Image 1 (cartoon, rainbow, N blue to C red):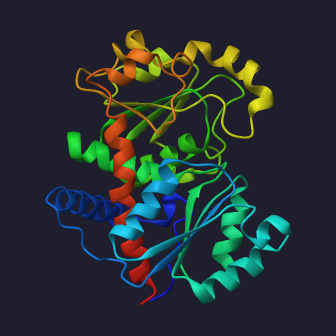
Image 2 (cartoon, rainbow, N blue to C red):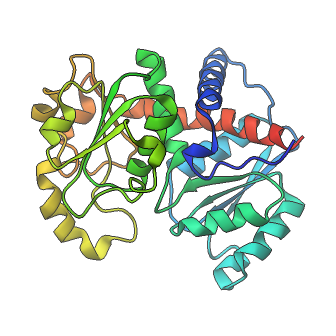
Length: 304
């Protein structure tokens, strides 16, 4: 079998995603019962971090440890990438020593170049363009609470960032309606290229319109890492797009609220929203572990 990578959500088919989600829930249930299968015995994951992380690092590292394998953390100070070694050379070298590579970085092309030259699976732990591992966990959370998301309405409110781009791909693959509410000038970059999303994705500047009748409401920070110099302008422009109780009241009665965290209370989300019955953000974060176990298992088997 050929090596598979997970660079963006669309690297998997809708059927493969549903299979992964079912496996993630199975592994979650087994863990709760005290069963932690050794899925990754004698396997090593190298984790490259240009961007800081809590959930991404802990979930991947825990997944490997619980599965009987190991994980190596590399910051820019810990590898020759930080001293100018070409990405292509790093990909070739790491492929000789580990079984998979996860990278969390700024420029999306770094992950693409790693995948092009690596002979082991490469996983996108986050780039400025996509955050596919997080959306896997989001979908697992929705499926566990409400069943299959096909035919449901999802509202994205705030910045058209990497998470929004990934939801655009997910809408087409999992057949749900996505309404994206963003201020003018903050539209998601993936939309023009996502021809497969036509018929699934609608763009608006009205958050009330987006949330009306939605089964899932999702937001993210207004100021991502690397955008700090533009923080004041972003907060001013996006203030009308805060997810608060008044906005959620327009959603469907059993709507769920998600946020990939960390949350800036009082900015993109009102503090009380995180504690409402609507909110599943803590379980959503925890599902990173189980979704990534299923993903790692799938990718490591692809090269056999």
